[in-house]
Image (cartoon, rainbow, N blue to C red; front, side):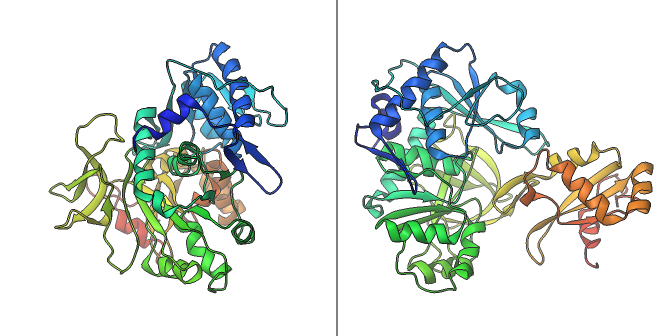
Length: 452
């Protein structure tokens, strides 16, 4: 099964294809077609070539996505819609397509309340492309370009690999479509394969149970942060209504977490390993504590001398082998174990955070001389900040206290980072510990947090 997504984008949905649903509404193919046609015409006539797309509603997002691609535009997808993130990406777009005002930039507002007249699916000779932004190791947002051919390769592989386990499934998700995982699994793959998706993002276990009881076959798209909390919310009880398939991505589940999900839903989650840059690399179900990852059928994996993952994939811009920052232990059968990271990009609640970017942002505050951010592993993975204060910062700390300064820095960081990723612990030494070469000593930074 090839060109699943490209064929769908060229032909459009069938009139009665169920595109999306929520607890009070459904969108069929003919309605979706009318919406996409309306906004495709507006965008085709607009001089802007680079468009930032953002909407929390997956159905609205899908309309903007298809309209812009069929208008031949470059779509910019930010990692989040924080004001600082949008401002940082301002050089990369000329127009914002959204259902709410995000900044002072020119906007095209998506209004799905209007009954647009029926029109044929837009035809085009030149489809657009996507540009996603993720945390770079330099501290600056890193642009990742994706052609529709690359995304089509991935969607087609997902369908080949998992379609037999998805009998007439609709898709619901606890993750955002603004990231590559949600974009592929929640929007692009369901559209191309003719599976309806829930337009809202599931936030509470009660909502999940509601849709499970309402619909006989559902595919759940989730993440380790959400799946790890789910069994306790369900009292670790076997559920009467269960998904046909559960996907998890963004980081590995622990063996105990995977088993707890299976205890409630009668099946292990299918974990997918990959990144914005690489797309999907491998998948697994944790039948044992040292479960290896199986590369997708068209992906080639090897290990460098230092254990760095070497990758060849049709989801990349060329066929050359690339070196990744993930460390692996390659097995004789071609499968592999993960063995950590070789760079300073970390995952906090499946949100990718660049430590250099956060350090750079903190160092821009008037109270800061320099700052270091480290990852603590106990009692659970969390960020901690070590800040060498300026004279003004020292004065504020003495007068207002540590809690005031902590909260002020958190508020400052919220301009670029999501709240869930902010440092949980803070230290204010006179000087940051460095070695004779002027390099920060990570272990000494971590040891500052050994005693409260």
